[in-house]
Image 1: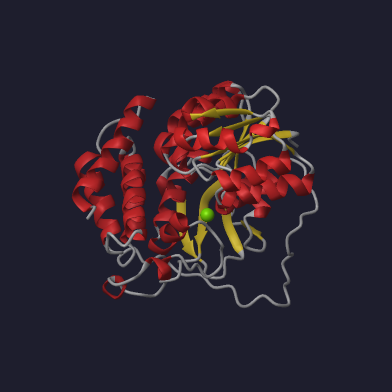
Image 2 (image 1 turned 90 degrees about the vertical axis):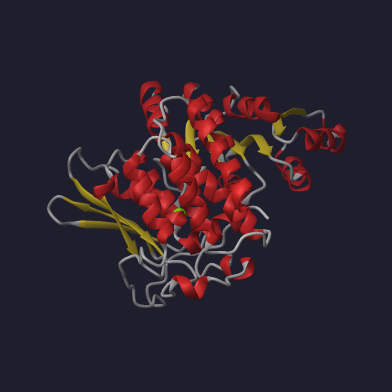
Length: 382
Ligand code: MG
C-alpha cells in the first residue's frame, strides 16, 4: 500500500474523492495540483498541508500564491508545476485525475520515476496507450486503474495466469437516454444530459456517459491496460451498475466484480492495493438489489460507441483525435453552443479529416490532439 500521494487535478470529482479516501486511510497527501479553481484548492491545502502545490493556469497561480502567503508553501505553475508534482521524491503514487491531454507528460514523467500511477485520466491511454504501457513495463512502474470498470477487470484478472482470458465483458449502464432513438435526442439539454441514473460524476464525463462515448473511451483504455485486441472486448449494457465489469475465462467461467456504484471504492483500492482496508462506503445489500439485467449496446442510436470501437481498430492517432474533438464538442454543448447530436458529428468529422497517422511519439500525439480541437472549434463553435 502507498504511503504518500500526489493528486493531479485535486479539485475535480475524482480528485476530491481521492482526498477523502486519503483522509480516511491515513495516506499522506504530499502534493496537489489544480487547473484554476483556487478556492477549492486552498481549502484542501489548508487541510492536508502538502509540501508542494501547482496551479496550471499562470494567472490563477499568482492569485493563489497571494491567498496562501501565510503558509510558507512551495507553489509551482504551468506544465513545469505539474511535472514537479508528478515526480516529487517523497511521493510513491501519483493520482492522475486531470482531464485532457495535459495529463500525458506528467504521467510519463511519474512512470520514469517508477511511481505507482493511480490512473484516472482517460486521455493517457486513449491517446498514448502503446507508448505509456511500454514505458511502464520498461521502467517497472505499476498502473492501477481508478475507473470502476477497469478496476473491476483488474480485480477479476488478478491472480489469473497468462492465456486464461477468453474475453473482457465491459459493462455500462447505458446512461440516462437508454432505449431512446437518435431523433428523439435532438433537443436534449445539458441539464438532462448530466443527470446520470447511478453515478455521481463531473459534467463532461456525465455527457460522455449519455452518448456512450465514455464507454467507447473505456473500450480503448481496456485494450491497452490489459493488452487485448478489440475483438476480445464485449460491451454489455447493465442498467443497474451493480456489476462493474467481468472477465470470461477459457473454460467459460465468468468472474464479475460487484459493489455499490461509488468511485471511492476503486480509488481506495488503487491506493491500498494489494491490501484491502475497511472503507467508509455503503456495502452492497443483496436483499435490496433489484433484478440485474443485461442488453446489447445500441450502436445505431448511440453512434459514439461505434465510432470509438472503430478508432480502437484503426489505432494510431484516431482515438486521440476522436477524444479531443469530443471533449471540445461536449464543452460547446454544455455552453449551449452545439446541439446534442452534433457531438457525434464533430468527433466523427475530426476522425475522418485528421485521424490517420501513426502515434509513435508524444509530439505527434499532442499535435493531433491540438489539431482535433481546432477543427471542432472552427467548424462547430458558434
Ligand atoms: Mg467508468
